[in-house]
Amino acid sequence: MKSKFRKHHRREHQEEAELQITSLADILIIVLVFLLKSYSAGLEAVADVSLPEGLNLPVSQVGGQDKDGLRIEILQSGIQVQGEPAAGLEAFRFPEADLNSDLTDNGTSINLTKYLTERRSHYPEGTKVWIVGDRRAPYATIQTVLASASISGFQDFRLAVVKDE
Image (cartoon, rainbow, N blue to C red; front, side):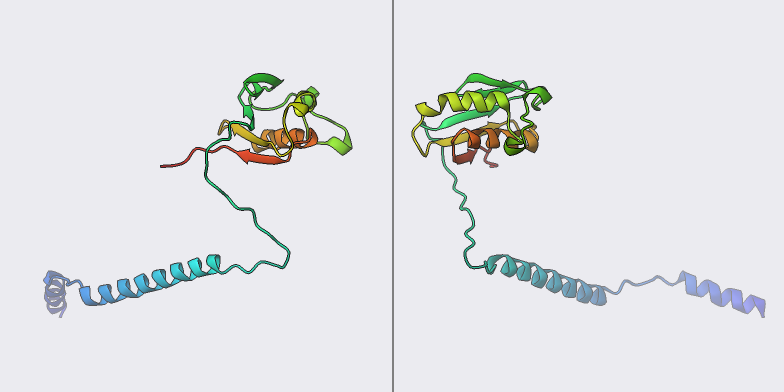
């Protein structure tokens, strides 16, 4: 009896297993349809955003830098305004002694605010301020530059970015 079982067991293993392509193709088509449907539903959700009344989103534009604008550069060792040193940085960060500790003026650089305030009269109202920063510059430094320029009376800010081709 054991020998019959062994012979029968060997025959089963000797047969080649066949791959059922038809059922595999059916499953792949169903998955493909599901992914396409969920992707297109995601696009519709983004395109049909209803905004609350009174909320206006900013518009992004791609363009060159104005020649009349004020250029503030954030470098690893310091801030330059129109190519002139305005404030020092240590590894893209403002030194603690340069940060304003006044509660009404928190988040600004004393030296940069002073520099920009002294030169504010040289620029007409509505002058665009271009912030050109190294990609390694932390957001806190960019925020401090924006706050300092805002306190100094500038209001129209542009962030320069590299266009990915």
